[in-house]
Amino acid sequence: MRIISDCILSEIRSFVLLIILFPFCFSTRSQDITIKIHLRGLYESKISLLPLAGPNALKPVLSVEGVKNGETATHKFPDENLPGEFVLRFDYKEKESSTPYPSEKRIIAGNQNLELWVHPIFCNNPDSTWFQEDEKENKAFLNFSIENTRQKQMIGLLQNLLLNYDDPSSPFYRECIEEYEKRRISSNQWIDEQIMLNNTLFASKMFGFQKIPEIDWKGSEAERKQSLQDNYFNEMDFNEPLILKTTNMKEWMDGYVNLYGEQAKSVPMRDSLFTLAGKNAIEKAKNGDPLVYGWMVDYFFKGYESFNIEKGIKMLETYMNDPDCLTTKRQEINRRLEGMKTLIQGTTAPDIILLDSENKPFILSSLHNKKDILVLFWSADCVHCKEMTGKLYELYQKPEVKQKIDIVAVSIDETDTEIQAWREKIGEMNGWIHLRAEEGVRSKVARDYFILSVPVMILIDAETKKIIGLPDDTRQLERLLK
Image (cartoon, rainbow, N blue to C red; front, side, top):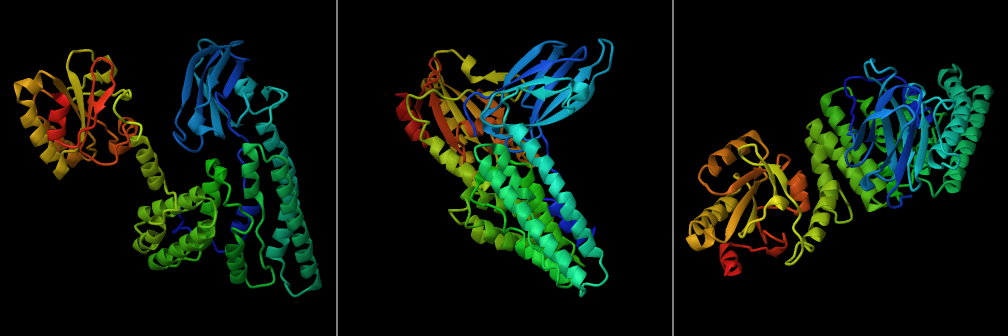
């Protein structure tokens, strides 16, 4: 959450124009959506695809080296990022001896395969780069944006006049308000029509951010600002969860928070205003889709945590405990609780690919021996884990047990203190394979095994990689080994 506290703006113009002339990103869902890229106009290019929102945001999810002039590259969009906005990045060479130079094109992907003929040097020039004739998402967005910009130019002119006119009591000023309102309402109605017309396209989920909230131009400057705050959410559909996959949602909310931030004259006042902004926004989103409700709580929690706004965090407690509020944390807990049901006897254990304590690669699927494998998720900073590992190591010393299992201990320790404790502890547990998941419970291996808390044990058949059982303690483990 981007909160401005040290840059106080004195005029409403900046905030109203943020809403009216908010820049768009030029850049629903079926299985295996691909993009076919025909490269032209240069020697070669590296092609990368970066999602702009959702999982792996701003990180390359595919990258292809050395695509030559005249060649075609075809790639599948990651399912978890669809539908969505992406950046196609080209690191191109005009000649074989040239130094790679970057260019980028923003695109939208929904439930249609894309085909793009691209000249990376001119990748945003429609004369040099274009999609297939029947492409829908990007074409709809472009057509909308052209007309939307045209309408907003006229509304912007009226707005500037209203902001700067020196006689608010004159008939002319009242006539300008009437004309402004007529055009504002007409523009919002047109946007609603475009949303309905393109309702099967992800691009339409971005249109609503261009709607203009009502402002009481007859009031004082403070009253105008207040009316903009009060009416900010009136035109937004919080029942549509796909708005969360747009880049617009966060930027739009940043604009709302800034309306409060510009009033702050001190840190305590800032904290109070941002807490009020959060409560007002969440109450508006509360009656919408649970995912939107949860996103709104997450948004303010990150902001309050960043600025250490304790009263804001305290205010959020009620919402975070609401089962209808699907915050990121609650979604992850729900996902893992559901996933735990799939980790049962007879199912194939997810692979584990990590570096061991000696920095050597470990791959669970590559282990093929006569011993079963006990995977233990634990933390050196966990009291129950210390108790479990002590009993387990004692059991492991029995020759009949050591002959039957190999123990793979996966640590979820993350902080420097935890890692130091882990390094000291593993010195006491010789004979085990020690791994550490660098991102803890957020790591891939912890997500694959649906780890919410530790310790957790999974006994796996070394040959088939099928799960034999999930013992709760060493006594259950001994019974499984008999």
